[in-house]
Image 1 (spheres, rainbow, N blue to C red):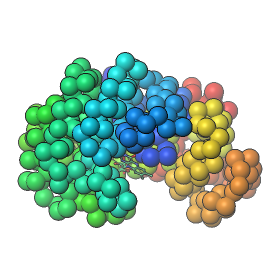
Image 2: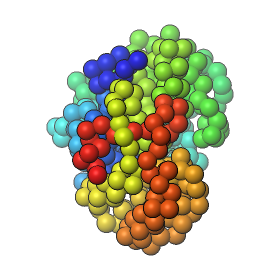
Image 3: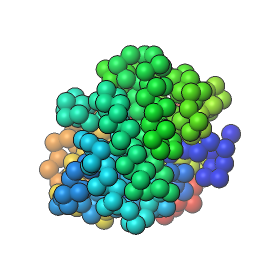
Length: 337
Ligand SMILES: Cc1cc2nc3c(=O)[nH]c(=O)nc-3n(C[C@H](O)[C@H](O)[C@H](O)COP(=O)(O)O)c2cc1C
C-alpha cells in the first residue's frame, strides 16, 4: 500500500507537547512531509494573555496550510478568545484537546475532564465555529473512564451538532498507561455513530502494523505520534520511499532545526524530550538517553550523540526493515548528510 499525500489514507503528525514544534515539523517535511501536522497543545489562556513565548507557539512553519493549532482551554470563553486571536493568521484551523489525561491538566478542568461537562464542551465547539465558520475544527478525544462506547458516542454526537467537523480518537481510558495498546475497534465503532471522519490515534510503531490496522479497521485517517519522533522518516516509508538512513545525520539536522525554530530557553529541554524517543530503537539507547538527560548544553548533547554513533555504527546505518524502527533516506536524506 502507498499512503501518499494524495493517496489512500491520510497520515497526520499527532500533537505532542514539547515535541511537535516547528523544528520537528521541518525535519519531517524534509523527508517529504505528511498530510497534516498538529502543533503541540497550546494553552488558549496563555495565548490570549500574550505570553512571552507566544510567537513560537503560534509558528505554523514549514507548511502552515497543512497545520492545525491544538488548544488546551478552561472554558468556552477562552476558546472564543483564542479563535478570534488566530483568525486571519493562516493555518488549517484548530483542534480542541478533550483527550489529555495528565493528572494536573485534568485537575484543572482541561483535556479529558471535558467529557464530564457536556454542555460547556458543546458551547466551546460552537464558539470556535462561530468565529471560524470555514476553518478546520476538530476535537481530540479518549474513551473516557470506561472501555465502552455509549457515553463517548453521545458526547461525540453533541460536539458534531455544535460544529466539530472531525474527531480524533485515542482509544484508551483516562487511566490506561502509555504502554497499553490502543484498541482501534472503538475508532470503527465511533465512526458508525457520527457523520464526520474519525481519525485513529495510537500504537503505530511500524509500517506493517499501520497497514494491518488500516485494512482491519478502515479509519478515515491515522495520526502517528511517538514513532514520528523515533523515526521522523516514517511518513516517507509509508509512501514506499526508498530511503537510506543515517541516524547521526538526522540527529545533527534536528539540532540545527531546533536552534533555528525554538527560543534558547526551550532548546535543551526539547532536545532531551526528542532523544527520549529517538534513542529508543538503539541497541544501547537507554544508556545513551540516561547520559543525555544530565547534559547541560546542546553542544554536550551533540557531542555525546556523536560519540555514541562512532562507537555503534550499526545503529547509525540501520538495516532497512518495514517491521523495525530503523529504516532508510530519500532525496531528502542527501540534504541531511
Ligand atoms: C510526549 C507526549 C506528548 C503528548 N502531547 C499531546 C498533546 O499535546 N496533545 C494531545 O492531544 N495529545 C498528546 N499526546 C498524545 C498523542 O497525540 C497520541 O495520541 C498518543 O501518543 C498515541 O499515539 P502514538 O502511539 O502514535 O504515540 C502526547 C503523547 C506523548 C507521548
